[in-house]
Image (cartoon, rainbow, N blue to C red; front, side, top):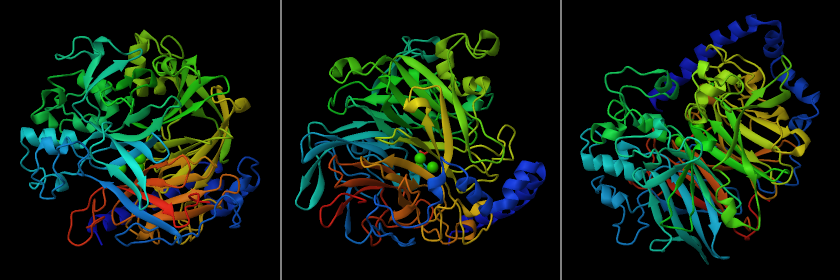
Length: 630
Ligand code: FEO
Ligand code: CA
Ligand code: CA
Ligand code: CA
């Protein structure tokens, strides 16, 4: 077992114990909450009409038809009995004509990677071309230098930086359904690599602002590339949304001297990717505005292989996780957006103009103009439910004034995190994916974990973030007023509080719908299928020790939102995260991403033997061709 992981676990234990007693002493309501432990949580759920379903423990869901699987520590991808899982594509597989095949020697040049499937597969969407053909648009979040280079990143040349940049971004490629399952087509006219050097256009309220101008772009509208593309979204008008998450990690300000903006967004004096050493635009001393051009949601037309990706500044700049799009009853487009960092916020965008199902071209501009809001969760002390409201992020309102540093709407969008603080947004336990139920329009968001909760200034325990030293995570859900996703208020509860009932007997055991057969930590990927099954993917500790004993490798679970039942559907190989999911429209195929197998502990997934581990998309189908999960 990896030593670092063991040490990390014991550190968690001791920190949690001391923190626990502090919290217990902190207030009467907290004492009630913590001392009551699991039974108190059960009580909250039993007395909470919104969360009543969560108390269900009977495995009688009509929605879930598959046999649950146990946890796994094996170096393989496991699915339930009656299901088949096959690799579709792995990092380095060529998708552009004339590109060489993957070679694991780590010596292929940037030009090869630029035509190959990028690294670290993440969020993805399925765009049908016909019944048996489709395009997959897939994020390639980041890359691991230990695998990408034979020198493991210790002797970076300018071409190596270009290769690293080419391993990032988005891959679009055609797939076809054959008798043996889905295959990718390596020379389709649609196939495309979008990398950290692809030209894009900035649109919306911040486009053209002085803060977005650089020595290479005096217009403030023309930007190169997208990177650290985490999860995704898709629009009803057929475009793909890719979300720029930890963009800060690629910039450096050597010598230090960060201002408050760089500090809030986490840009330091060095960068492990080393791009700034041979590409001046990543050196903040040379190009102070380049970081402002990243951290956005980017809209891509997957059907137009030469179309220009559009960065949508109306959706705010932060560490974007995914973009959950729905059409409100009012006809406006609503996009829910998480900012994945401890103590950051949960947002929603509402378009100015309405969606028009019969005018595809008009819909193309809907993400250019609108209003961004950030959430505030109100809570009755000690209760795992409450109301909430959406706070407007518009210059001149809610304290977003020149006196507070906001001179324009462009500044509000570029420094959205700082604007959210001024309006009084709730600090959350790392908002990851948001998903909207296709019929009820209930919204769920994974709050993956937060070791700072209850310890750091401004991150008090309570409301939807009910545990100090929260390393298990929870899923918050809410219903907007009058069932209208463009409403300004909502009612929330916790759908599940993850935990380990074999280790803890208090609130860290998890909510009533967690048991020793379905426990997990750090929910991250999230999505509803068309029937309303809630798919949960984890990105947590796979140490299988201490607080995480018995949890095994990262996993995929499926929940019935009505009964609260949660059942394990898949387990990943060693030292991977499972992230990215999409379905064929007939729901008879699900695509699941296996990201960074072997990240910390050796893996040889998917090829086995002595091979290098490679991030891979798996396709899962049923032996009888039935609906996945049913
Ligand atoms: Fe890329 Fe927050 O996960
Ligand atoms: Ca994630
Ligand atoms: Ca995560
Ligand atoms: Ca990841």
